[in-house]
Image 1 (spheres, helix red, strand yellow):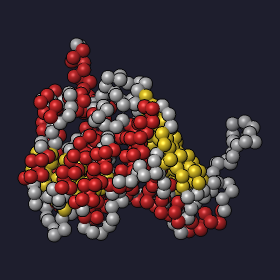
Image 2 (tube, helix red, strand yellow):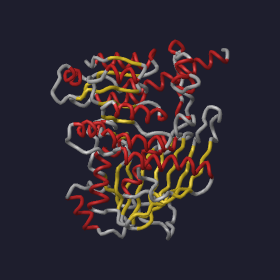
Image 3 (cartoon, one colour):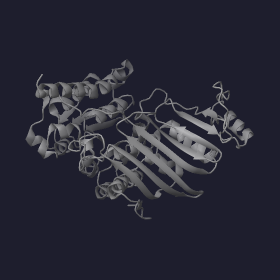
Image 4 (tube, one colour):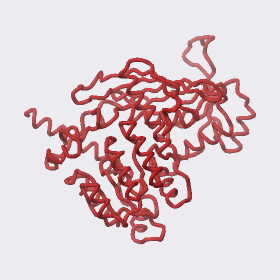
Length: 452
């Protein structure tokens, strides 16, 4: 087999793999088809701007929400993303118009849509979100707000100027399990006591570059118009500086946002180490791994937080842990993790009361017997008692509660859980972390750096 044919075969495999998971989530439920047939006075008409993998995930979540109707789809990959998503929406009963140019969409759909979901590459977010708000539309914009802080700031300023809603896609902010842990475990009961340390990670296994069908190539002129040098770059934009922000932005942003939220603080400084140690630097301009340490000044004292993101090994997946002198919270967006662990010195009757109040579930059995024959070291600690978090997602996709919050805010029923000002704080943290890796030294955050 020639090198060219081998490369094309690999591209096709990677393309199919990258779209299979998205397609699997788009099975048409009869209940969704039934609700798509009618209209109501409070229906929200939506356009999807960016119909790639993430856009399709958000679309799928929206289709589970009553009263949301897609009217338009815009994507520059007309031969694949645009046609595929438009046809899927048609099958759901959402008759829609298609566009490759967002400006044309905003012009022709004026008066026909109420909101836009922006799921384009990071370097387009600011231009797209600002244009939509200035067109009088509310915006749900995927994170990161931008790969440039100046442009992220412009998004917040545009929101204030237009008065439109701007929800940033840090979906854990609306996740019922995270809300329960923040409001009940940390704020109300203070189960963890004084939090001293946090850590988290998102590890992913090594992957080949994403490919594309040879019969659906975007022409060079169109790619250049929208900021891409090739199909390779278009499909793998997250790895290129100036287009994406690397894994600390793509993955770490979600979790570092949780540090700031749960600690009610922003960091004073960051030390970070990273590099492109595994992949070809010509195709992976961003670091393939980053290790970072932040220090947060909270009202109870300093909290040191460690974060690790890997793209070469998937060990233990992704989670966040908050550790205090009375207990530990481990939580993840994945349903398999969500527990509070009681320290040996914690007041047991208090924990029993919290179980009765439903803040935590009955404790899990702790196995302390050691059958290995080894003699326990005096420095070892008895395993902490585990209490599960008694809240689940009720079968909803991860992004659905956050989108529900956005649409409910449009109806005046709720406040946004992640408005632009909050998303901007996280953008500062992660984009400056990339700077810390580059500088190879600790970077300090200014007191006013997180505010617009």
